[in-house]
Image (cartoon, rainbow, N blue to C red; front, side):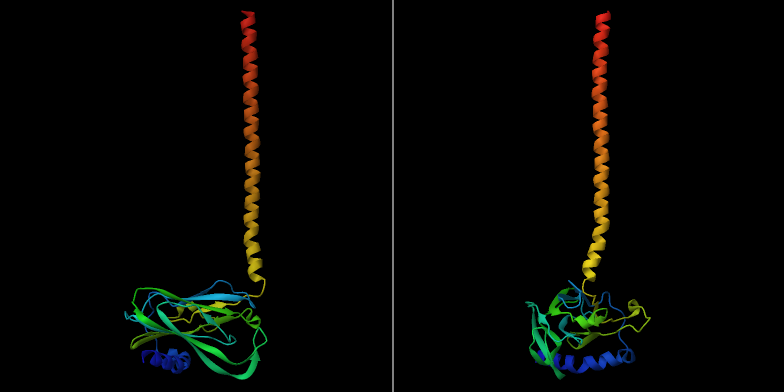
Amino acid sequence: MQRDTNRLLARTLLPGLAAGALVLGLGGPAAAHVTVSADGTAAGSYTLLTFSVPHGCEGEATTAIAIQIPEPLNSVTPTVNPNWDVELVSAELDEPIADSHGNELTERISEVVYTAHEPLPDGHRDTFELSLRLPEEAAGEHLFFPVLQFCGDVEHPWIQVADEGQDPGDLDSPAPSIEVTTAGAEAAAADEDAEPAAESASEDRESDSSGNLLAYAALALGALGAVLGGIGLLKGRRTS
C-alpha cells in the first residue's frame, strides 16, 4: 500500500512541484543535497549515474526516492539495491522512435521509484545507480534529474533549476544534474592532464641524470685525489 501511494505521488506531484516550487516555497537548505555523479559524460557513450541521498527529511527517515528521467533519455537500467524495491515507470511517446539497436520504442522510462524495505534513518547515506546511454544530441547540454524524497508523510522535492545567470549554489533544493560533453572531450582532457605529468617526469629524469653525472664526477675526483695523495706519500718516503 505504501509503495502504491509513493508511486502515485511520484507520478502526480513531480510535474506540479517542478512548475511551482518557487511559489509553494521550499524548506530551508539541508545540510547536504541529493546529488548525482557520472563515471563518464561523453555524448553517445554508456555511463553509470550514482545518486547519493545523505539524509532524511526534517529529521525523518527516508522511505522512498523517485528519480525523474529527463528527455531525451528513453531507457535506464537500475542496479539492484538490497534494501529497496525498484520500479520503472513508463510514459507513452508521442511518436515511435528507434533505439540504439534499431528496435522500435513506443514508450520511455520516465521515472525510477525506489521504496525502502526498512526506512533509511536520517543522518545515514545510501546510493542508487542507473546505467544508461547519453544521447549524442545532448552534447554540450545539462541533463537535470529531479528527485522527490519521501519520508513517511514528509517529502522534499529536489527539483530547482537555476535560471540563466543565476548561481546554482544559491538554490535551496537543486535538481541533481550532469553536463554531457562532446565525444572525445574527455580523452582530450586526459591528454592535457597527461602532458604536464609527462613534462614533469621528463624534468625529473633530466634532474636525476644531472645528479648522477655530478655524483660520478665527485667520485672520479675523489678517486683521483686518493691516487695523487698516494703518489705524494710514496715520493715523500723515497726522499726521506
